[in-house]
Length: 327
Ligand code: PMV
Image 1 (cartoon, protein in one colour):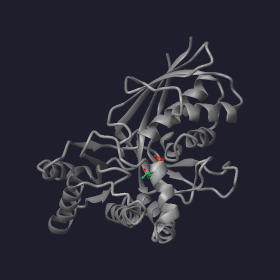
Image 2 (spheres, helix red, strand yellow):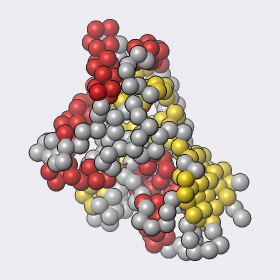
Image 3 (cartoon, protein in one colour):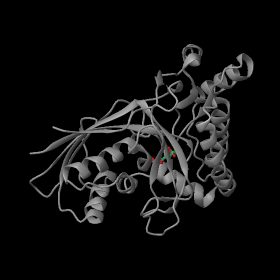
């Protein structure tokens, strides 16, 4: 029986996706730009089953058949692609799952790539991105390595809503992301729930939406020019505005802990007092991601290392493209 091994990476958004215009097709309200992170890796083994049943292991734990997002995704994929196959899946993350480190992005991207390979579909990368999107929005970006833009598209059927690689993984070899993790626990509010609450209840959602959409062109230019100060400033601004959206959502989405805030303060102090180019962003969780250049990484990591409550500090490169190996 054919088996595939797929390696994918989490994709960190510099300009975030937060909110859907269609919750079934996972069509976002706006575009986003992300980087794939070598340090946050997902390894997924996948084969097709003789029985009409999916068997799923995530981080060595069996996932019950009923009402889980992975089975829902596989059902959606079967229906979209017109296939009648069921799968055995064994997926492991090199980092805490569902804690705000984009495990759903790398996980569903791996499943989309695995299905394409196991079912000999020969889908285009656009089609694989569309398929991955049905599992989790950010997974549309994780089907690529390097630098990725996910366009929100205009069509109601989502056929123009997929991600594209904008720069190869090797584009800017000095760029680094430092990941400061603060917990191994799962997040309190899933991003799926949280983002729709924000769309419906946050008074600052529309302001963020318009400003964030307007940041796409300047960020593309800053990435092209490899301008760390601009890339960092745009990233941090987008996160600062999104944080306001999250905090003013009802119920308030307060993903951050005192450890997160202590890390954020240290990064800002390093920048303001020591003139180091380091900039903060976070996702739907307490971990802090710092955008910087290779030469400054050691000093930043050393400064953060003394923070109370810090679990780990990891230096990540921009990862290569996902790999699919037939076993
Ligand atoms: O793809 P989801 O449903 O896990 O949502 C991801 C949301 C953020 O990580 C906060 C932002 C993003 O663009 O990745």
